[in-house]
Length: 225
Figure 1: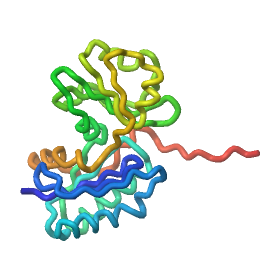
Figure 2: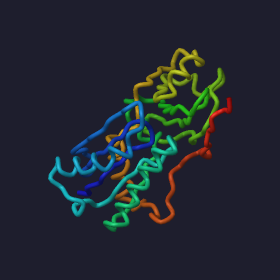
Figure 3: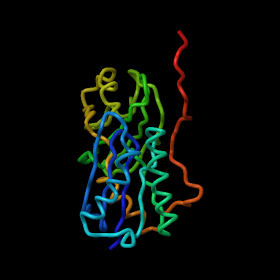
């Protein structure tokens, strides 16, 4: 059974898991308000391996949350994953961040999950998944207004989850929409997705793989007095 190291750094949650097949055998994470990935990620990786008495040589692959999300967080995670893959000669698996978030919602027949990550002001990164966790609307960066997600107001129940859920709640008044801003991307939900991709040989070209930023990085300068 494949042993995979899963790394999630797309948001404030620095999360590391080790999975054996579909099962997570260890999870270590810290969702700090200030990003701490550069200090914690490699420490968490070592703690995870030590806790389950494994070494790097026992790993079959490394999975990384590919985004969208924080530019800096994604860079740190992808750089760490690619470095380990190069040095250990392991395959790299990428997991869409919003897809793994959708897996945190228990969906019934006909219900939908819409993971939304805050992208400043009234903008979010979002995608739409059905009850089988299949993406039925692609990932977008979009401004939230009264017409957002209007195509889904007739569905039995729609779960809008993630750091952008509060701004959506303030604007969207549909009775079948439920909002949960507490859900953050985690390496726990990456595990079954990564294992399926591993079995199918769906791996990345390590040399050319880049995070899915969705938007260009913009450096904000302080206003002159």
